[in-house]
Length: 64
Length: 169
Image 1 (cartoon, rainbow over the protein chains, first blue to last red):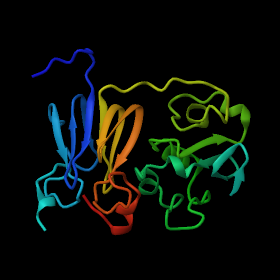
Image 2: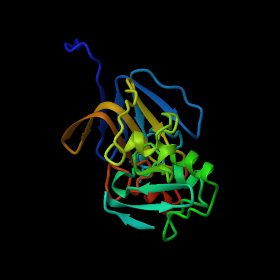
Image 3: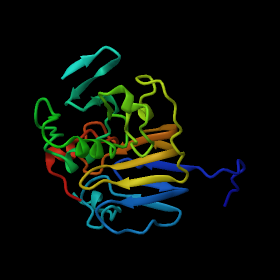
């Protein structure tokens, strides 16, 4: 694992092509519809609308 | 309803007590307004804001939920605007210093907040880097909404399509 030299944690949001939204770093997840705990470190959020584990990605976007 | 020369690109709506400012370019389709008060804020109606649809108190309460400055408001009685507190988060004094010269400090958020809107987008707020289609963009106290229904024409961003397709989730 690499050291973060700046000393400041940076939250990275990555839009994966034809896939979910990847959030890594320092974040708080607030789901206004469901009671979900904020996962530690990294999370994959559904962007296709088909996941049966919303708001998380469950790989449903790959099924045609 | 009329255009305000001091407020380009937007519209304003008034009742006897308050004026509501609508700035479409700032809207991220978080959808608090119509979910909370469809009687006043109905995206399917023209004009979409009906100031007669609810009490002033309820309209103010709903506008204060808007996470951006797409909806802001002020009292028509200028004297009353001077004593408005930060709890009235979407009063133009706090959101639009250019409309009413008065500065305020909105508290910084770190860590960032990732809000999953009911039947709507993911709303990201704070300091973060957004990576998409080979672009890496840094946001400082930024606010961005990401499509969650898959139907947006402006991927990866929300453009309000979730409401048209009746997305639930």
